[in-house]
Image: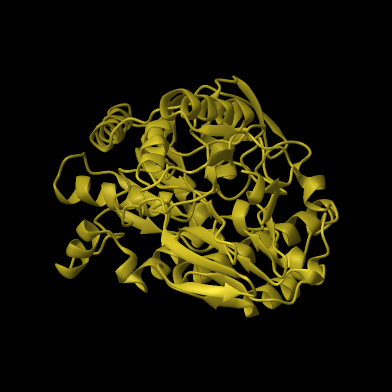
Length: 452
């Protein structure tokens, strides 16, 4: 079995792994490069393989950095099936259609070339073949099994086994242990080669209790100074987790009454998809649903689908809380709110997700005092607060614990899906603590399981 990373190698985005055996050729993930200045042009680069010869694609979860080049793959000649879990199929369709809409808007505004159009998205979605967790499928001489990754709704890590008994595991993105909505991740299965994410390979999260207290404290302080709390949030999972915990605070009267606006049509649609798959909820979330509680609805929450409803938030009295995408502040309705409120010292910007290098979110997280937003230079006077444990990614301790969960340790571990320093830090800890082989592969570096 030959494995070659064509993305997420010494960087976070663009996940794409080519797996070749004597008979089969498949991809695990097919994601978009995002964030840094060269990402846009990198997405347009020709594939390093013939797309028409790929037998199938297996998707770990719906996020754009794992699915965003699927329509481009179809446009390039791929005609095979795309296997993914049922929630991932619905969420990926939503995310890809939204991505194409943004490309069209950019084209209309700046004539930026489009990576693909709606026809390509539709052709891609037509190839979706949903399969459930713990189920297996064979593609020629490869057996592929999905296991719950605990990252977002429908996320999976993928185990491959060839006819010679060589096994490789692709973690996709692994979930935080304090994720309240989804079931905890499955134990690691035995593997010769493990490709493990390292987004937070050099960091440790706060615990869930600490993050709820910090959220509560931030809201109370915003209300006291009659300010605005801006929360840029990823439409899938992060927004739903946030609503889940706001629901708890509101219904138990643990925070002051304040108007909360969910200004993200995609997040609103994603929440409805969640409700279609109750079996994917965690035990606690499922119990709440069974008791009649609406997880994503509570007094004081307003959903704004239309542009006019979004604009009307500007006239709403202070204090108020605005949740909007995109989570890395690289587009979406949050941009208009940043222009309006970032220069006000009564504003708090609460960052609750990973910010890729090169994004506006990363600049604000790093403390830059002047930033460009929608072609305007904004002097940042808002307070910047970050809660790391809202991440849907495992931290360094959790990644190590997951490796330990295998009956037999992997023969060789490859740290991917992380900035180079984070991936290197995780590899170092694996070598020192677990005494296992661990490396950080390069883009295009081929690894052969027979040589491990």
